[in-house]
Amino acid sequence: MHANGPRLLDRVRDRIRLKHYSIRTEQAYLDWVRRFVVFHGRRHPRELGHAHVEAFLTHLAVEGKVAAATQNQAKSALLFLYKEVLGTELPWLEGVESAKRPARLPVVLTPEEVVAVLRRVDGTRGLILRLLYGTGMRMLEVLRLRVKDVDFQRREFLVRDGKGGRDRVTMLPDSLALMLRAHLARVKALHEDDLRAGFGEVNLPFALARKYPHAAREWAWQYVFPAGNRSVDPRSGAVRRHHADDQSVQRAMRAALRQAGIAKAATPHTLRHSFATHLLESGSDIRTVQELLGHKDVATTMIYTHVLNRGGRGVTSPIDRGAARAALQ
Image 1 (tube, rainbow, N blue to C red):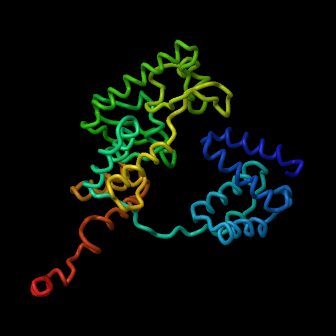
Image 2: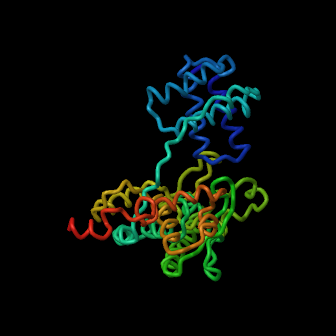
Image 3: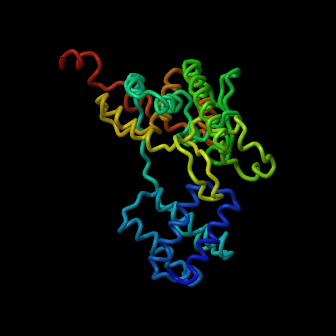
């Protein structure tokens, strides 16, 4: 890379951490900046302009055939680079047209299909999948739950810093309460083992580690779904137990779909879509569903009204009526 490359990436990393972006965003933005510089012959971004950004984004779409969301993430990374790191106001960059996401309806499982999947996944991964369907949370929202965010008495979860940086409350299903209590008992025993071994700290958000220096070892701040092994924090170098990884849950879902013979392109996130659709089917108010999902705009929630189990447009096909139906059977 260009001689200024490593210093540039360090500046990008420092700025991302100053603004408290997630580790996943940090990794993604650093990768896009690196790819952008390499694509243009390792020239420093200060030497590049509108045409170079457009050429890179066009290359991603035409040659790389990336999805619209991926191309837009690359654009966001470059916007961050120029505005936040290089301190350059480039109105043309904001004017670069974002890729249009195709309007697709979400994949939804029927209640019977959901049961068929969940019956085939047990243990911690099974509990996570049940929570996705039972609460409507996103995968990372479940994995990032802290013990203090679970309220058994009020039968609710407090979802902290969800998409868009918003907090919200969702229900804790009665049918999962005992399973969750038993899981937390095992997690607490694991945490106590870590403490006896001289570990037991967990990553705290933002500046809380300085404000509450002992909180990182407290039970209330531990992840509900901790990783199976301790690891080195890539930012601080401390040995901690992070939250569980989502890949094993993804694999468990795929295996359950195969075993159940369900030929749908479903993922764990499909359980969130199914949660919303099934609530609307049962007569729940769309505004309530919007709040449970954490959607900023009810228009986002409205997409689930298009996949309700009422036919293509909620009407009856003429072939299913009267004489036509009798004659053709």
